[in-house]
Length: 303
Image (tube, rainbow, N blue to C red; front, side, top):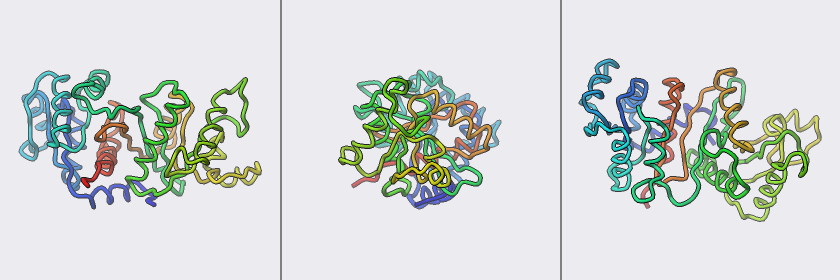
């Protein structure tokens, strides 16, 4: 089991170069991250978008554009469509958002005819390296699913578990977050979902992981809190994956870790036929680069 994002990067390097298609690639920080990933030996970049703007941005970033393949498609939505086509034709291995609105980018991903959806639920998976914490921590879903149902949460967990397994977690522990450790149907209906998910894990309806909940954050990650509260659980104090009850709490936790705790982060969208690197404009260069490494590690091997 890997414990740092540097180890995740080493795993990505061990897999050999993957082909990354970037939609509307004329974005300064994205190009810097792609160039760093190229230099690190994990990707070959395919830059799709307005060639004139891509070349100017490369010049501004002091990047040699000859290091990449460039496909000239000025319209950003058409550029995203072309990236999806490259994935479907096995001319690229995964995709990244550049200077295109998230809504337009995701419409291309979700297009029923030419998109990348597998027919299940898409979800956002982030992984954090936190100062003073002894392992990586996955959080889901902070960006895609607003108020997931019980069945949505089943798929969100499966997506996160698949991603964790791709980067070296054989049997991750999943904590269903709540404010308490007891089921309260009237006041906290999400605790009912958490309990149901725990039973589904026990009955092997959800495989390749162990799930427990409801668990408050302290009990999910701190063995000291578990001891003080007297909780008996195979997950408590040892969680690898934190399932938030809805997008608000997940997003607050995500941004609290990055802005207040200074955690290093990487994130992708999964549930697609290929990893989707979907970073925020506010994400720093390091997050974009590490997200590319996470995407590289998430590419399915040919059987």
